[in-house]
View (cartoon, rainbow, N blue to C red):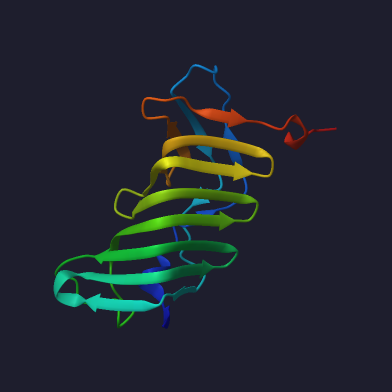
Amino acid sequence: MFATLSAPLRAASIFVLATGLTLISVPAGAQQTSSRMKGMQLSNDQPIQIQSDKLEIRDQENKAEFSGNVKVVQGTTTLQAGKMIVYYAAGGQGSVASGDADIEKIDVSEKVYLKSGTQEATADTGTFNLVNETLLLKGEKVVLSEGKNVFVGCQLLVTMRTGEAKLDACGGRVMIQLDPKSRKTTN
């Protein structure tokens, strides 16, 4: 099934990982790291297309469930997952089907893959909270990469408004691999 939804689902476009990843290196024994991800931002100015094998709109429950090979594309950003549930405001005047719902939260699961520009992220699950403007990716192994720079933990929390990011290891250790050749040089 192919669905093209307009303005309200554009808000769902917090799937934007543009360039500008800057994580701070920490000692090897650290269990978390914090940083700023300048490129992580909300985007409401481009159309969004959603494809899935199945779509169930449950207006009485204020949600829409996309399942099976879910693919969301907006501009140069792509999100893929096995399942995506879009929750919209109760008592709102619109619905997902009419294209004017007020989206509050989006849950994705079953092998989440997110790509924008040169950045990629993988996780088991993800929650995009549009009210709090946060992105939370979780999994046994959450991987964020840009080129040869790789960051691995079990939970990545990004505050969309500020670009601040926190990568946790959940009892283990955060792993960071940095390629010195990727560092920008100034003349």
